[in-house]
Length: 190
Length: 183
Image 1 (spheres, rainbow over the protein chains, first blue to last red):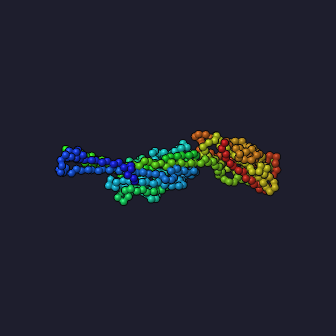
Image 2 (cartoon, rainbow over the protein chains, first blue to last red):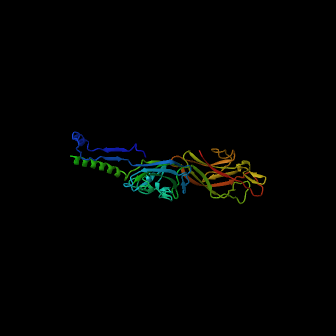
Image 3 (cartoon, one colour):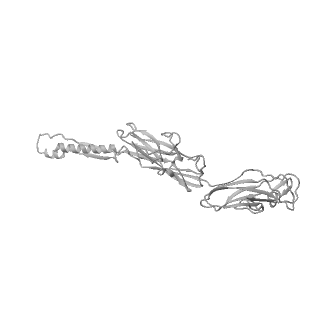
């Protein structure tokens, strides 16, 4: 964190009083107050460092289909621990009933499972939860981690892997073709 | 005057500091995205209910030589094409069935599905499936949008047309290949 992006506000008091006292030799002026307030903006960022494109080349009906490689996610923050209790990372689909679509059909988010072994869903969990602090969609979200913020980690980051799979067990036979969708990752403070 | 100014500025400073702190609860990052793609490959399969069809006793100079029927299920899940075709074929048409060195050619073996008329296995390949003079197109099912995913079950009847033919006593065995192809 550099100082450059931080806003700096200087509040100067007493300049009018100093000009008035200039002609009074030996007389002390009243002590004035100089208040300095520097406001540093909070920082919260999420970056997918690898695995931003996930692909299953050949789906198998009525079976669990894992995406072959994890999504590597880096979350960084610079926060005031006095005002921030935690950072949460949320994964969500904008339209849960159509997490993936194509070939004339849809796969709902209930069939998309995620896990973050360094986070909260250490076992594969359907992306069917609600929003976290306003981030996510009803029935189409998954809280990936909650990071407590304190003085020791107010400026920090963490790296996690998100594993994804499709559970087509009992799902109707898919028509041949390609389905696609976008999973959104977003962090929020509480 | 000084007290008023000092108070106002102090309040301003506190307000600014307060607003910065309040912004930290509910602060959100810019969204990052993961693009997900999953592909279901096209499929086409043929499954007979039985791998064996038998004819207990051959009658020479007759068409009354019908093997036990076999139900064949053809299943498809496609993205393109206009028809699904089921082809039956013998690898060596001159020796469709063999009893030692005695052979029954494919031209004397006839097949049909459903109520179709029997026809000999002496046609050419369909869509690259089959062999010249040893094949028979058993059905051609039109497909398109809305029917790219489907299946059908057919009873396959096979018989020997031995009209004008005398066979040698013994067991004649052979292999009929069933294969579907999309065109």
